[in-house]
Structures are given as C-alpha cells and as structure tokens.
Length: 96
Image (cartoon, rainbow, N blue to C red; front, side):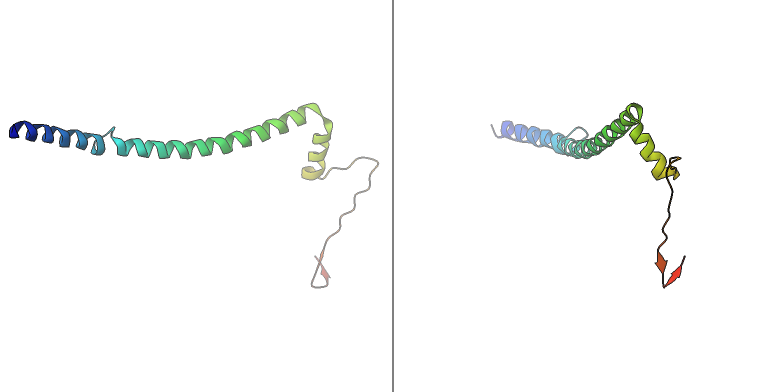
C-alpha cells in the first residue's frame, strides 16, 4: 500500500511539473493572455484611427468644403474675391 501511495504521489508531482513548467503550461498561457490583451488595445486604437481617416476620406469625396478648408490651411490658397492679410508677431519690440 505504501508503494501505491508513493507511485501516485510521484505521478502527481510529474503532472504538476508538466502543468506549470513545460511549454504549453500555465505560464505560457498567462504570457499569451497578456500579449493578447496588449494587442487588443493596439487594435482598438488603430480601429479608431482608421474610422477617423475613413470619415475624412468620405468628407473629401462628398463635399467641397473639406477640400477648400485643406487648400486654405495647408496650401495657403485664397479665393479671387478675397484679400489675404498676414500678421506677424513682434519679438523684443522688433519685427521678425
């Protein structure tokens, strides 16, 4: 009977070692869950960025207001009937 208990105790220790320490064990599962959580957060931020870019593309395709706003802001364009004024700030009482 004593041998029987020792054999089962040895098997229990062996199985526990495989469960905790080897590849595919709980340690690896925990690492994979952490990596999955991190990647899920990255994917959420990229999905929101993609949605914003998609909305911007649709706005540029459908309306001229967005195109005009970009032309004014990024290229400095003005309409023919407008007058452009540029005000430069003073530094130390002198113009830049």
